[in-house]
Length: 195
Length: 228
Image (cartoon, rainbow over all chains, first blue to last red; front, side, top):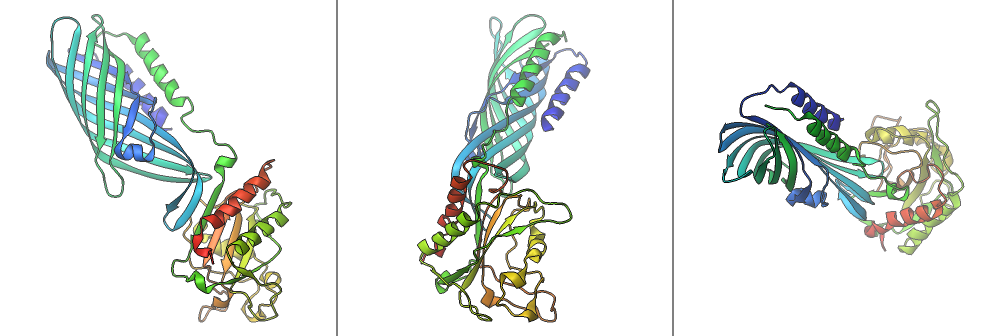
């Protein structure tokens, strides 16, 4: 269900965005490596990730924008004994982590010669995090909104007067909240932007 | 802003496909097997040395909503596996309790669900009520039952409930049974230990005997405090 909501959101935003001078919209494919608390729960490199960005260029060297992403990590744990409350359970575990960061960001561009424009950016916001452990017929789920920050470096390629190609390396970190552990992952983004 | 919607739409499509492409694992029947145990941490298991095991299994059904078909052909295997595990852990079996006396330290009850239990917190009130106590413990005197619900003390299982085909192995301390004061319609039996193999008898499976053996053995393996 969440999948359809996010895809609908992206489609809607794509259709309804009005053309503005100096505004670009990007969509990136976002395979990711889980780290820290995310890797502790679901430690597999994930090919499932996507983000959507709107960037408003204030000038040639600076933009501010909005970013929403979705990353899904999963791991199958072979049969093992673990503890839940006062229960001892032996089973195969199917673990899933869904993370949806929502950030505002600022990016600094280093314009040089040619069509390649490197940049460094920083995002700040929140993220929805859901950890789910399917054990036989049982599902143990925890979810939390976490304060989130995300530094990134990347490069834009000026394809033509209409489009960018984008490549980036982005680190996401969601701070621990209560019993819910911190969540972090490193993403490689490959995408396209419309000017 | 110029638009390049065909490329953009293609990327959206690729993203959607990536997410919908088997985001969930496909589990085999064996991978859905769960062995689960719970015990009373205040119980001194070294004080419990003998057990009584009824050679029958109670099938718990729901007359109102109907019951699922569950394989009854494994009764002998289940009983023998449970008995052997207790013996292997150093317990002594007591057979044929005398009338009105509780010769064994604990009684082991085996039951299988033929209906789903959705709300485990009410589980004890619900399904223990179905136990035909007068048949199950014929030596137990009339003044306390039959047909009264039993309230073991530790109803803290996952709240999703238990599914058809689940095998329960329950250890009851019948010597510790209590009648709540001023309430002659119910009594309480302590459960020092209980184990379950979730959903294992549901459906048909050519490897059922192997799975049953694995899961019942696992229930005991993960309960080292039962070792004598």
